[in-house]
Length: 236
Image 1 (cartoon, helix red, strand yellow):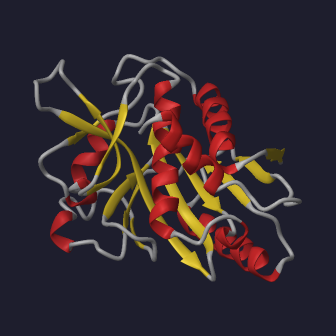
Image 2 (image 1 turned 45 degrees about the horizontal axis):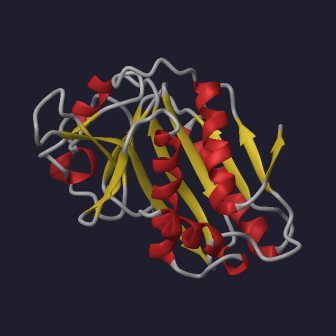
């Protein structure tokens, strides 16, 4: 994406004038998946009613698999390995676990731009910008949602997925969001066919030789988020 295209994308998802900063919350302990779903649902209800502000919630889950609305049961290779949760987000099977930064993004697109495909592209660009801060070229694919990294060290045509995206909307308020591999146990992905794709693998920042901590990466994520979605405010 050219700088001009990125500028256009950034402007298109800035909030309307006078909107408060997006609340930015980081959970230090592992968060149970069902607990996260309940809290996310309550926040979305609050945003819709005008009683709560927009929120990005950064966390890690204990090891688990999730199945989105397009999930194929055949892609759950090891159904007894970790708990499996059926979820209303878009997409197929994904893994969540320690070392992977999950960001649940709860934004009111009525204040921004009511375009779901453009919103997904904006999330991808957020991750691509984060990777570029480490001098890693992340790329999008027209036929595969998420962010991909070419691996010439493993072969001329090899590329791995480093981040997944799965969203849902309710009255133009977004929830669910992104998962970004910082230092997860990559073997845990072998219990599923990630996002239904067998031709490519998965990677992480540490796997690519970037020894970054979760806290350091959170700072990069926040800075890149603000270039596209506007200012944030850290909350506890």
